Image (spheres, rainbow, N blue to C red):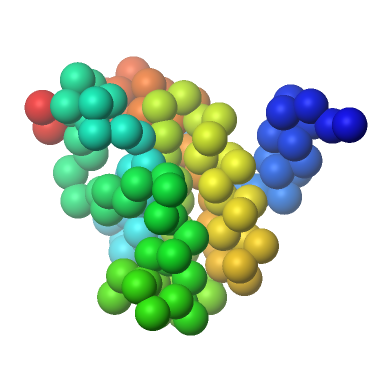
Amino acid sequence: MPTIDDVLAAARRRLDRVTPEQASAEQSQGALLVDTRTSEQRARDGVIPAALVIDRTVLEWRLDPTSPTRLPQANGHDVRVILICAQGYSSSLAAASLQDLGLVNATDVVGGFEAWKAAGLPVET
């Protein structure tokens, strides 16, 4: 049976992961930066300006272009979606799940929000 480390490694082999700086640059050019951290984490650590906040439990339904409960920004399978979680683990699994739905440009941020904040990128408290 595979371990979670095996599943994570397989997910990451499918992704072209980005640095926080790359994610910020892509966000400024129209990519969807999606924060999947919990409300407690966001309240404690801050939020990324203009990032979409989508709870991990409904992520696929909100970003699948064929879902009746999708967000307006999820308007095609080619939309660039960059996920960010606290440390870059669950976001890798989530990005692979989005790719399974046909969102071919889904990826995540290496190091997650902790790396974003450490890089000095914008955070609102």
